[in-house]
Length: 254
Image (cartoon, rainbow, N blue to C red):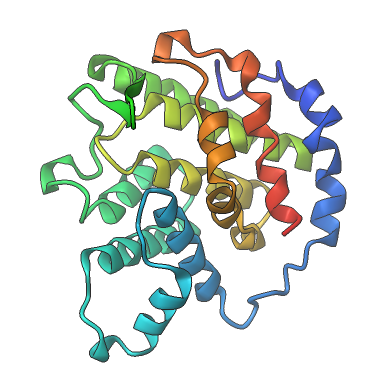
C-alpha cells in the first residue's frame, strides 16, 4: 500500500470524507488566536497521553505557569520535547530531514543519543497484554521503505488536492508510518505529527489548530483497533483501513 494510492478514496467520500468540506467551513479556527502556543501544547499533551504519559493538560499548563514551584518530572520533560518538535515542524517544510530532526528533539527522554533522529537497526514489535500483536518491517528494509514513503509525500505535496483528498492522504501517511515503525521509540508521536503537518502544508497554517491528537486520545480504543490491520508488515490487510481513515474527520466535530 502506497500513501498515494486512491483505492479507498471512493468509499471514503461516501462515508466520513463526504462531510469534510462542510466541517471545515463550520470549524471555528478563531479559537486560540491569541495563544497559538496553547493549542500546540495541548496537541503534545494528548499525543503523549496516547502513549501512556499520565500528565493531563491542566497539570501541564499549571506547571508552565509556575515552573519554579514544581519539580520537573520525566513525563513533563517528554511533553516539553514534543512541544519543541511541533514548533519546529510549524516553521519548517515537511521533508525527511526535518522529520528526523523532529524525532531527534522529541525522543530525548525516550532513547539514547545515538538512536535519536536515526532509523532503527533493530527489530521492533508492538506488544499488548497477551504478547506481541504486530511485528514491523525488518531493520534492513526500513531505509528503503522510508525512501518510498517520502518520495510519495513529495508527489502529494506537488499535486493540487481538494480538502477530502488532503485528509484522506494525511490519514494514510499516519497509518503507513505507524506500520513501517522506523524508530526504536516515538513512532506514534511522529505519525500523528506528520498527519497534521501534511494537512497544514496543503491547506494552511491554521490547520495546526485541529484537535486530532485529542480526538484520538478520547477514542483511543477505536484508534488502536483501527490501526491494527495485521500481525506483521507483510500480512497487513489495507482493505480494512477505512475504519482508520474515518477517524480523522471526527476531530472537526469536537
